[in-house]
Length: 236
Image (cartoon, rainbow, N blue to C red; front, side, top):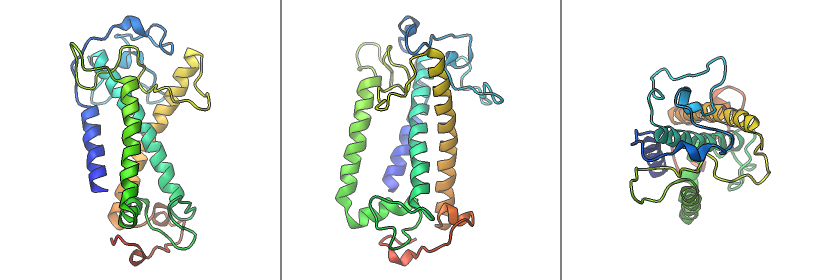
């Protein structure tokens, strides 16, 4: 668990590190989800700004940022936001009072805060985590093949393909992606805003549960505390 958290933090730091401009031509974006880079607009005109906050950038990260770097940041933001939304949903669903969990017989006993569930899995079946790591690695490898440029010629770290729209990895099994450019920009803005909120929410939930070892709804006084730490392999 500790290694997973460390790897996540390192990958996040690398994703948001300043990168060289690289070779990026604006011409290839003319028909890419209806977005055309505009240096005079905030964040090169990428969707994501929403009233009343609007162009929120108090530290000036977007000011004079090269297009290649901005695209890398947006790619990282979109992916981290999606993971955070799944994480928040997963933590809330697997804890009191819902306690639905595909790996545990949660109806028999309270299995405790979500931040410790993988520790319990590791104690009972460590090979499961190996399979989980391989699954996540294969998904990330596929995403890299879709979005990242091959290290050839003039190349910078985490450089995206010139014809890749940040965050658009081609995964849309339900066909929800709008065909209209305006509708696509609106949907991506909603996704980014929810992802940003989820990143803050996930960080808050994890910090709170690490502080006292209690589930979130228990901390809020909305659920009874039935968790017995001595009933699980990992002790707090």
